[in-house]
Length: 147
Image (tube, rainbow, N blue to C red):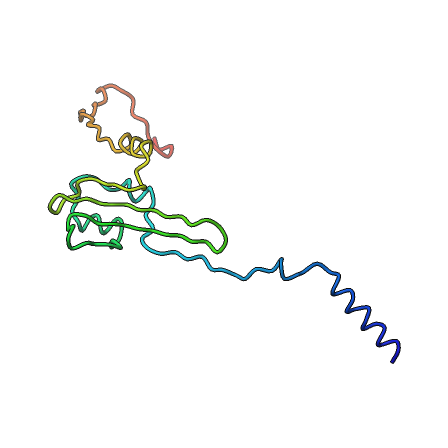
């Protein structure tokens, strides 16, 4: 019994001198995503003159549509990681009637991506030429060794 008591006292004293372990433990926090995630690639697909349906197809349904500003759609995105800084994005799409007029906010197109896209979408006309006919006395090659 004496031995058990001495071991218990020894263990309890060790616990009290150890550093506070609860200071190193933090609760798990989930990542919270809210709103419309709009990427640079999605914005690069937008062209002035597109209809509201085309814009909705590319970006999705806007988070905010204001009845007092019918020619404006707001795409708001907020990402709050469990541990770290909050990230926010805001894209404003302006219409003139039913057609896309211009964009605003902090999500803009990448100029180099748009420039390279313009370079790859070229139509080149190649004039048709008539096939040349072999000369009357030109040798004709036969396939599969036939004579």
